[in-house]
Every structure is written in structure tokens, then in C-alpha cells.
Length: 188
Image 1 (cartoon, rainbow, N blue to C red):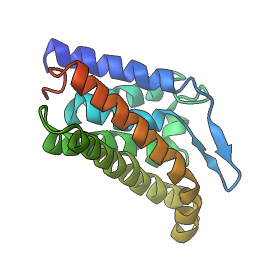
Image 2 (cartoon, rainbow, N blue to C red):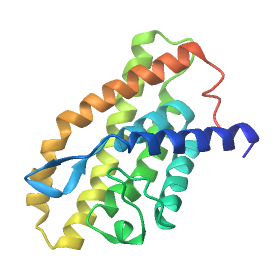
Image 3 (cartoon, rainbow, N blue to C red):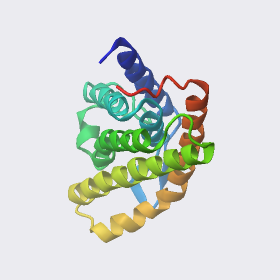
């Protein structure tokens, strides 16, 4: 990694932590899994700084959580969070950011028509930032709580509208960064 890569990883880790300052919203159906803005960081990091750097930013955040820093939404931190019912979503953030970045790197190019860039960033955000994170999160939630898969899956549907809004916001931000700073996406 270059100095630029390290700076971008640290910057996005800081952005992810700042997104955690927004208070979590709890849905009565699934009280164990709150709605947080930090999940939007998966989409932002992957689309803006790419697969490797985006995943590295989330690894850095998870390391901060592991040593006990209260960097997750609601001021949570510590190993107990990484073993609790939301741990799958947290681990899924790393893989989600990586896949979001991989897709964005593959389909979005400077010089393409804007609409193709928007579509590419949006699809990358949905696949990596929603589908991958949900796959990890739902699997762990079922395992850790003993709740049937179908029940957890249905309960997670309540989060989809908000996550789609996050994907739109991440798409707009990623396109704005690409237009304003085209050298940033040169991937590590």
C-alpha cells in the first residue's frame, strides 16, 4: 500500500466512525439489529476508494471495535459486540465493501456516460452493500439466536427500503467524487 492508500483507508475509517454518531433506530420486529448509517459506509468506501482500500477501512474499524473503542453506532465497542447477534453484519461489512468496490471498479469508468456510471455504482451498492452484508448478517443472526432463517429473512425486509435509500445516496456521492476528482478511483 502506498501512502495515498493508507491515508484513504484511515480517512474512510474515520468517515465510518462519524456515521456511527448518528443514533441507531431500532425496529420492534428485530430489536437486536438496529438501523445504522454505518452500513452506508460499505457502499461509499467500495464505490469511492475501491475494493481493497474499502475493505481495509472496515478492517480498521473492526480492529478499533475489538480493542474496545466505542466506534459503532450507539457508542458500542468491545469483543462482546463482535460475538453478539449483529456480528455477522459487522463482518459482512468488510466483504460487502470489497465486493462493492470490485463491481464498481469493473463496470464504472471515467469517460462513460453519466447514466452508466450511476447504474454501475447503484448496482455495486446493492450487491455488495446490501446482499452480501445481509447474507453474513442473517446467517450469523440465525446461528447466534437460534431463530429460524425464514423469520430472520422476513424481519430483514424492513431494512430494505432504508438500504435502498443509502444506495442512492452512495451512488450520488460516488459519482460526484468521480466527476470532481477522477484520479481518486485509481485503485490500489
